[in-house]
Length: 403
Image (cartoon, rainbow, N blue to C red):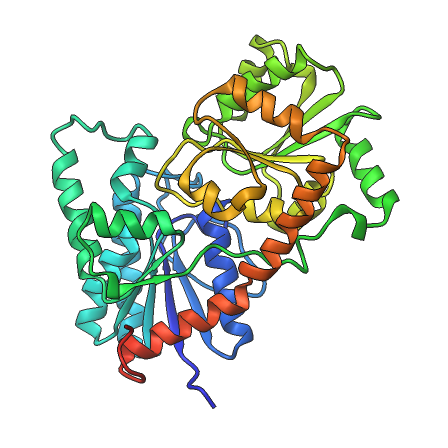
């Protein structure tokens, strides 16, 4: 029988929140537990609880009770408190390996893990400095950019194993940061296709009741988006696309699910004249996400970032939804030939592709069915978990090094 590992999973974020990297952390922890390993997620004081995941939290910051989304000056103190919590847990001697998410987690994991004799694997989910730029935390021309870029390079090159969530991430690490390809292990975002399932598997009345509760007009086609609301996520471009689409047809509703900045984007929708065509749900609990997405006739992911993953695409795929995205390497990798692609940053092109994806002829349905098959065949968490455990064994010296 394979060894059961005791894993300290570092999440330098307000875990759990219903988006992006949090979902990856949650699903990795869940599948590893199902395989017989023990996982403790070490994270900030803020965040929601998850009943089936063991969580160790830092001390709180009294003046900062909000979720931390992306780059923030407050994260320096949160990370200092995270280091204290990790030191306490490492001293107790109850772990075999550190599984670090994001660059702050990798830096803390490798530093404190070395002191405690614990190896660290790094779960890479995008460039640290590029995310800071996306969040307008730093400018590429600022004095601090080069030191931060140097630090990111040092972290990337020091990790014994890096999990890459896309081929694009692998290329980035090799071409821009000079990482050794032998240290990189492909670990794409995955999806639970038994949970995220097509609308046809639900009782019609269940979805009809939810549709009425949300105020979706009878007979309208529904475009679904689930994720963060932010400029680098393309939220403004999506609202502009709705304005263009609204001029072409009046039977479409955008179900815009996510946070933060709801008031900002609600005002923007009103200014564009599409306030009655966009329903803002706010935060949708992850457990409710499959049911809400099942209301969709098409899914949309207008992310502008070129370095981050796009796990929401996998949810749409598993639902069997025709899916529209801006044309980025990550979107191409996940959707393949069956996605609908708009030129990056072009709201008019996005509107056109959404109009095509909502067509009632056979092509969108065929593409949607192909996307569902692709999700089932290539993006299953059980396969990913075996790769994670192989990496643990390698860095622990329980198996030969990865090649």
